[in-house]
Length: 324
Length: 268
Image (cartoon, rainbow over all chains, first blue to last red; front, side, top):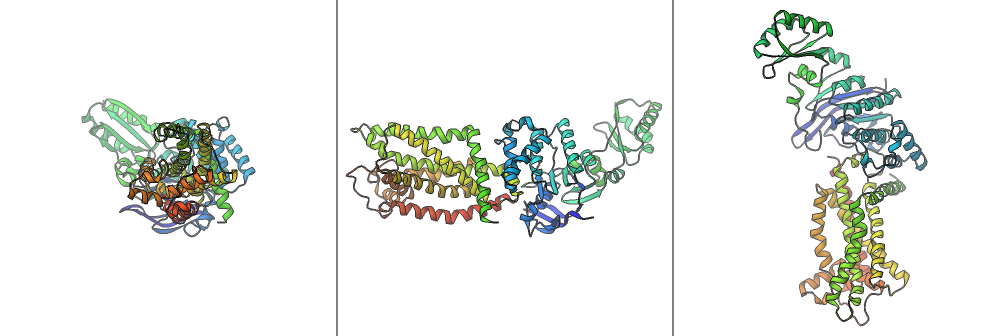
């Protein structure tokens, strides 16, 4: 299959901090790559390098076969970028923003206008089309920003944390929009802090930490590695945690995590509700009193815990200067 | 990148900035109200004190070109502050990810500031006429006077573009430019005749390009009262040429500097 994005050995340093430490990426045409990692892992740096905004200190990259370092202007014609900060001009209306971008892609006046109206309609921004973007909600701004990346219908799109800061409804709306886009055959590189988001949107997921790739595979492969769901429970009395661990560990598919301070017990399981009811039965037998119990899907924290033995939060370093 | 694209892209960026003048109240006030205020304040506060027997009329006429010069130079600082603002937000990343001419971002900014200064000059001109200023030369000479003011301010806006790319925030641009521009526009013939200045300041003022652009505008508007002794310093004897020399110098130095700094500051 033809590769839409290829990167080899990308290295970027900021004043002694290594933001990228030899990153290799391959994204086949028409697929979605989810770049998953905590803040400061290097996700944004990768996007900035691949979208020609930042020169790496080492390595090479091609987008649709064009060398990013040697022919950046050529690459810019073939990509669309939508950043986490929603780079729309807040004093321009949605229409004016998109029309301006069309003109700067050199689509010409007529096509720029038609394309702006078209995108506003398909992103459900028609009613707000002529209002300054300042008056938009967070979700509307993100949609406008994404629409900006699509103006020239580029074959490759970079989305940097498209849903960070959105409420659950805004997030679901954004997912719908992205899924429609992908169905049209666009290649997408998406960064996110949410495993669930990568799961829903990406064909392949790359987990990144400290500028290095620490795992990669489909969502299913990754989840197998991380181990299905999480059985999570809180006991009334710390002393009971030992009983809980003894009773439930055989039901798990991975090592449990016991937190005395929170009086909590978390363990990867597979088998869903049956495991939960079996666990409750066993605890009932031992007369362990629970404050809270439930099954949940694994989060980025769980992925990190499984891959590195640390949680993403403990592990996440603050953003390197100038974004990471 | 072909030259027509640079201009077309710059025009698109300039249009964006001009739309903003309408929508950002601060900019609108800066553009329309403060020029009116300057003309009125200087004319009536200083006018009465400096030229008592004429009721301020002669001084007002002398003053207008100076206020024009000062205001368009301050208008040029918008360039720096606006660019610093854009740099802080994500919009420059968007521009840089597009196949547009990279230099169009700064060129477009400086273009829109010319438009801004044209509006400023119209507003000030009308206010000036209301308070008794008159153009006593020909239409073409007056037009040349306005043109010269705009050219000089345009050159200054490239210095500001460079500063805007260099400093971390719009506020710093404003402070930095005030420190430089206030003395430059005051130690000149903008508001007072040069012979009233102490000797060292007088020499500085004679060679100050702000004096030259003011002198040129004054001459071209026909606002030099008859009987005024001719200036002795070369820059003031040839104010048009001297203004154009400085403008060219600023452009030759700061257009490349600003564009280089743009590349450095945006690719962090």
